[in-house]
Image 1: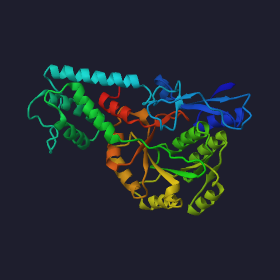
Image 2 (image 1 turned 135 degrees about the vertical axis):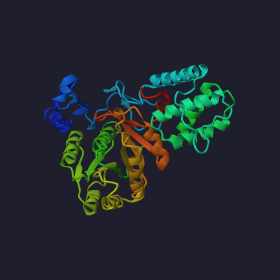
Image 3 (image 1 turned 180 degrees about the vertical axis):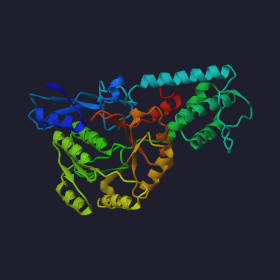
Length: 403
């Protein structure tokens, strides 16, 4: 087994070096950005580093080698991906269950301490118009709920959704209920509203077309590369790529590199007619991942272009994923999701979880759109920095803080 590290100024350059030195059978285990530290960061550009391996004695069957994997969500038998036993990065928000449990316990202790001191929340939220947080009895329940209310606000959950949760659980609480009971009730309500995660539905023998849509800069192309790598290497599926993002030469080049490394076909299309031709060429594949151009949700003509492209595939043969950055302002996300809802039904993929401590937008957009949550990405590493969204983990982070 040959394991080597490659460095370069761009992600594409690094992957090309892997391809040139180790050939098409190389397996890229991670690609990560290396940022300069200290004062040097002011003068040095971000560089990239890839770790790749090559089996010198491959098995006789011509299939990609299965890496050592484990299911990070053992209680969820429907998970489609598994993560490395020792992830290359430390920022997987769904990996450290013990830390999350500790965070929730710490929050419960903090609530008990503050309530016991009689101080309640230092800056309690004002009661809503519908009286969702209304101090009628001046009891411990109200103080505890106010603290949790502010905790959710701090994590950028929209106030109307906090009021909704509180108004639903408050009548069920006994007077002077234990802090753990109140916290548990809100936690369970958040998990229930986040709902069941829905990932790719794949049936071998019938090609499935998967469109990734969304605004520019959210990471659609890198997300497609991660999905393709996982499906090809872990699930041994027959994968093909299509890109309609001909506006960005770098996006096409990036997918070409990944397609070469994975030894899978890539078709570049410009319109619906070329999409029809690509369908004929790729009809024998299990799954075709389609990268669309980033479009402004304000431009109806651009949205119409995507809608026509999607409609070249019958509804029963396609899945559409709206890719959003969790760091985008909620008001902008409202407008984006509304525009794309006019194009197609979709599932939600959230990117850039590694760039923020506040995950309220995941909850906000889930409740706003009613669309199923699917995947989350948390770094540039291919293929490791992607995972199925876990409602319990999101709920704990919203309640336990982001530190």
